[in-house]
Amino acid sequence: MSSASLSPILKQATPVVVESASGSWIHGIDGRDYLDFTTGIGVTSTGHCHPDVVAAAQAQCAKIIHAQYTTVMHQPLLELTERLGDHLPDGIDSVFYANSGSEAVEASVRLARMATGRQYIVTVQRGFHGRTVAAASLTTAGTKFSAGFGPLMSGVATTPFPDALRLRMSVDEAVAYALAEFDFLLATRVHPSEVAAVLVEPFLGDGGYLAVPPAFLAGLAERARAHGALMILDEVQAGVGRTGKFWGHQHTDGLVPDILITAKGIASGFPISAIAAPEEIMAKAWPGSQGGTYGGNAVAAAAGVATLGVIEREGLVENSRVRGEQLLAGLRADLAGVPEICDIRATGLMAAVEFGDPTASAGGPDSVEAARLAGMVQQSCIDEDLLTLTCGPTGSIVRIIPPLVVTADEIDTGVQRFGRAVRRVMGAQS
Image 1: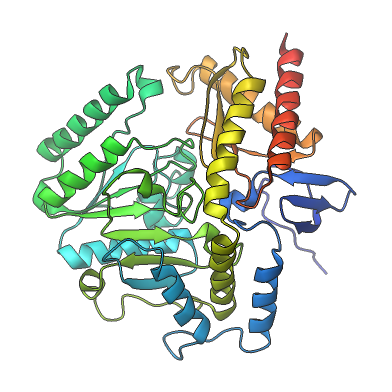
Image 2 (image 1 turned 120 degrees about the vertical axis):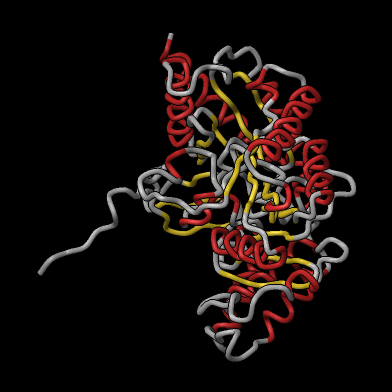
């Protein structure tokens, strides 16, 4: 009789096997308590096993688990839609639910193409939008997400990201450069009349935990509007309080998307995602183009309702802002003078520590060394009972993603542990 095992390609970032978890902490079967600054890649927004979320899911399991929502409707999805509507931008009043961020991204592309009758989606370099074929075709956060299974989806064009650090420019100069390149793209590669939508993350996720400059987002939106294209904002990772505002795009005054994508933190770990748009746009989707067996699952929807309730009652968006400022200040103070670190940044509870020279040639020796250091720091954190992750096109960034419920004491603890991990690695290099 043969035995089965997980795919060998599924490499864990840590060796931790979970016994249980609560709040900001994971308790391993090894008896150690780990401060979890990964939160399932930004998913467990209210912390692990928040009692309100657990109670809501348990209660719903006793009523109905799977109520397929194009067959019968269930109350949790109706309530989630109403509660989510309280946070959606003005005019965004129609919601479609799916299971994952990738699925929601693909639904947004399908809707944009149907609504406009156009084919091209313009994406921004370093964006991450998922691993399914269409979503990977839109992703430029790293070749590992799209290599080896081409041909990819056609009708995609990519415009530069205003990466001031890498371009050795001021932010204003980088924005001017990137917007000029967008205009040049429309003059040389894609005619404006063929652009269905511009797709962008307001804060880069896997591409490097970088804030997208508000002037760049505003410039993209202005151009999309002028050319009759839609503006799609991928808030899968940045939304639901992660950046110190409920939506990441709210850091850009006056910016309102045509289609907004959300997932991850919306249900504290239960799989549910959504796209939201004005009803007049959503109604242009072709009949039968929206659906899915598990989309809008009743238990996940109930967890979503509870999650939004916790976020509101406990003031977690504001906590994200305040604790994020504390985290950034602590990291900068503790790691000041470490020459291998080129940047420490955070917006809300999306924080990053970048190693090496960002202008170094990708794949060159300096770039490889920066990735090696970031990986060693991430692994060294485990010895400090702190869980972190790496990201970025070359893997040179350690990202820090505490839950929105993180306390001041936990931030201080995390900063201290991270600092010790960095110094251990740097000491071993000398």
